[in-house]
Length: 72
Image (cartoon, rainbow, N blue to C red; front, side):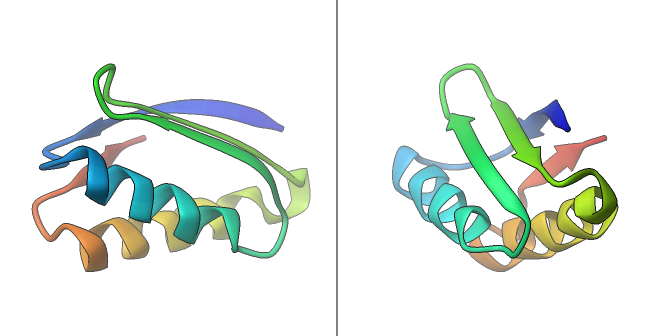
């Protein structure tokens, strides 16, 4: 499954890169792309794990950048 999300209040490209690397390491994630300028997060992952992966992505975003929000 592949889905894209809007990501808000990510302060810098460095934080975007950190978040992208952290999401890549999650079990079940096949591909991730985070475009800082477009504020777009695209995740390709296993269908059966997708919901839990998104929940974990939200936690990672808050840990890396407390003001960051992933719009579902």
